[in-house]
Amino acid sequence: MMTFRNLPPENITLDLATKGKHSALAKIATRIAQRTALDHRMVLRSIWRRERHGSTGIGHGIAVPHALLHPISSPVTWFTRLAPPIDFKSSDLNPVDLVFTILWPRSQAHTFLPALSQLFRFVRAPLFREELRLARSADEVMAILQSEAWAKNQRPRAMAARRVAVS
Image 1: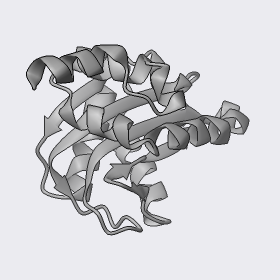
Image 2: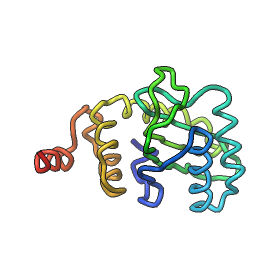
Image 3: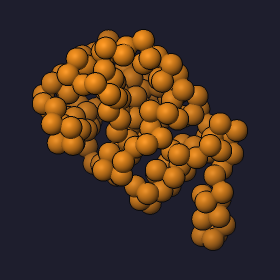
Image 4: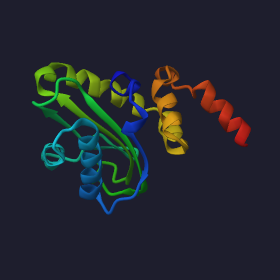
């Protein structure tokens, strides 16, 4: 998954507690701003503006808040696992616990939809979602995101070995 393949561990937040959708997006925007020197209000405003057009909750407990921004020259991505899951007004009405946030350079808008489509293909795999929900660290999340196994809807070897050892 190209947009999340090289996600640094600092851009991964596990078990973030929030009071709802706005709280979750505000906390994520603040963390993104701290890592990128972007204004957190601008990040939140941009994400929230898109959210008002329709929920970015895509089903199966996943949301993909996103925005096209002028001030950036390369994509900014963030993975957040929420605990507990929250209502995101997803079409399937399932609460969201996996949030993939994407800020994309407006100057590269033509490449955004293919990247988003690639992410959607990966998150359709039940094993992928399950592994992200069970990950115990940012390093495990990174291994899951970097695995090629998801393209074949297979469990990555490292994750499969861990599951056997835990059983």
